[in-house]
Image 1 (cartoon, helix red, strand yellow):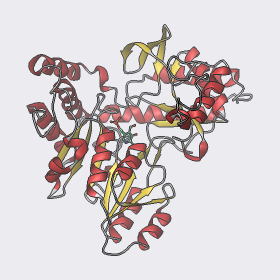
Image 2: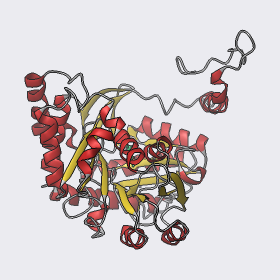
Image 3: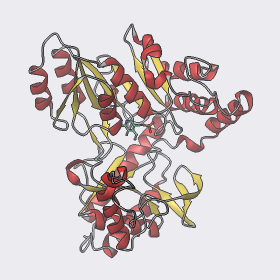
Image 4: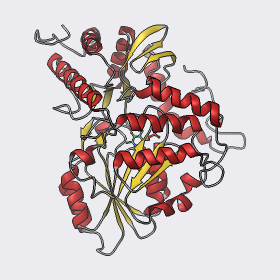
Length: 426
Ligand SMILES: Cc1ncc(COP(=O)(O)O)c(C=O)c1O
């Protein structure tokens, strides 16, 4: 049992007979206990004792290759980025202790927003304290009563929570299905406000949205378009602007949401837009106004990282090589993957069930490899996934080592049958 999480002897009702508010979590508590009873290490409670580089950490006392951190461009240990953070810490202190609209906007927040405007070649940029808050804030503020939000059913939790926080009517459509999206749009009142929400890369399976077609359909029905590029910023597109750039629709989308917690290598979120009235968001968007702004060291690291990502062509090319090689190697071994072809820096390995998935996760950790275990309800179609995210700093040698680890763990857990001779890890 994990410390502080489950208390099986807890009575179901409280003194006076009222229901324990925690009883709604009984199913998940049971699932977790069942999993841990099978003897596997808790996959949701790993501690990194020391982080050595963007691709290595000490976990359980062992040197471990990191393949599940979404640190796509490996900026977390970039010397310029670290120096910028140290300097800001020394010059501006540890935190702003205030909201962006009061005492929480320092020079660094403005400079970070300038870097984002340059990175995307857009007129406006607004930095939030996380990507979660950026989605929560922008979606709930722009789509209100009488408006419609048309969104992919596999949207990230922060998008759904943004919808739940606002008063718009929410109309989901089947994942990445252009026709289903058009069918929903066709039925909506012509004069109503409409916001279509898409993601560039969907993080569970690592698949890319058909943005060219989807944006064209959204525009045909007069909808505004918001694209969350959390998993593509820095990597996809000629300048790393995301799938919107790759698909040639960046000038047609109204809002791009992103995060600093992946390619940028720190924490924070943002929205960029060309909408002429965008700046009013700073006064009306509650998750921007009613929370403290990012510490000066964080915005300084983000700004430096974003400026370096503008020139990250070589890193982008190497990351593509890594992704293609891992995808090909795992396919050849006989693993079932989330996409037939590599579409992003995420390679999702589909597990037969949660128990096997947890066994494989643990076997990989013992080999010295960390990946993300994902399970329902976060995953589509009740899948259990080992989500691998590659980094531009993974060396060729590390990718080879990773393949060997997958092969051994796959065999020892029985998930892989007899591996074909052509597999790269054999
Ligand atoms: C698609 C998507 N949007 C938004 C977020 C939230 O980003 P942050 O970690 O900055 O809160 C994530 C994070 O996992 C994400 O995957």
